[in-house]
Length: 449
Ligand code: C2E
Ligand code: MG
Ligand code: MG
Image (cartoon, rainbow, N blue to C red; front, side):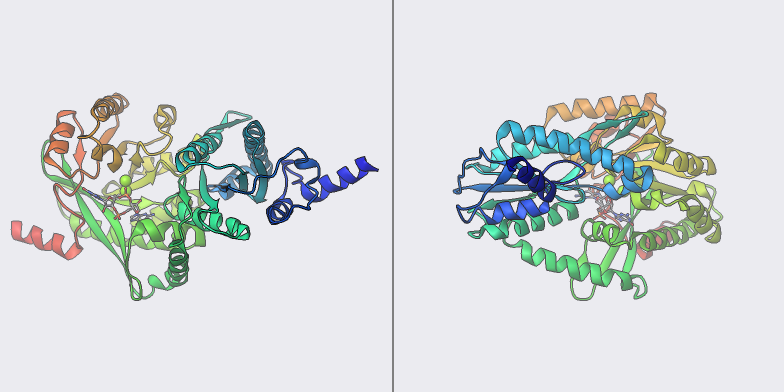
């Protein structure tokens, strides 16, 4: 009979796919931290109850939907099972409670006093579990997780708020660009409301002409001449004022508006490229930032071709910046559409190099001709002598692979000299120019003539 009871308990409270406690068990478990009368069943009969301190860490996989969409749900399931196994092992070793609290979300509850540094170390361990997962047939997933952390009693005196708080922190971590973690902070209430306003007002923003593009010039390191412009989207929202793209782009991606925004950006940038290049002997490359979600669309190639033809621009005038941190996944996913675009004459640029999983292996295989070194690298140049060595090495390796190197976020003379000295090809940053309004660019060209 006892065995039967255990079976029933397990059936009701464990997640079928991964075998770890499910959401219902998680709630029950948290709830009953308030009382001492609960039968914890098979999962934690040996657990001692320390109610003084609790830390809840909720990890949500970034772009899990893409793995499902690209490789099917079977593969998605395998990824989840693998992650659950590793999380289980880690939790068991340390005596933590683990549950699957959502489709691609796991929560770890730690019931002992813990300082912030120790929590951060644990978060790093959890993130490592997501980083590289190998599966059958040479598929390597570069997955990542966004993580929210909430603590009792520091953040709340109500245990029942723990989960809500971790969730708020998680939302913030996602909005900060994924692959991040965030501790709950009471000011986050404001933040989530703001996110809702953003999400509600995004769909109309194109129709109401609230978006505009600014263009930041890029200079040849040696020629010191403008060789291109990066198009950067701006949004003046009537109630919120200026909303930076780092805030609204992730929301647009999540809420499904990024495709129409991305099209508008490319169309507008093409019009600019036409004005800059039509009838000239020399041309500048106008680059747009492309979201991973856009590239994933089966008709991305056709869309790009259609827009550029309609706007009468030559593909060689257009650069497409894709980010390294886009979780993705298999090399082959991108390879096909990118090589077709490259074959058609577009410049393919890897943005934010150095912030993600910089694997030389996938760089070699991808049809990318330019890499853009992330600003965080350039910023640490003066402070950390190692950064300089690494940067030089990266530039040399990229040149060996026949790739061009752009440095972004260059602000000081010192950084500029170092980069020029190290044979960096193109410089972008405040040292030369901030992003400019289109009208100002045309005006300054007129003045030159
Ligand atoms: P990103 O593509 O890496 O763009 C470079 C960012 O660095 C821009 O921020 C630019 O204004 C800023 N920046 C350039 N030079 C300097 C410098 O010397 N110092 C400092 N401190 N900053 C510099 P911005 O415009 O806020 O854009 C942030 C990010 O938002 C972009 O990063 C890009 O990932 C995304 N984004 C911008 N426009 C678009 C768009 O049209 N579509 C998509 N999908 N993403 C966009
Ligand atoms: Mg960019
Ligand atoms: Mg960048």
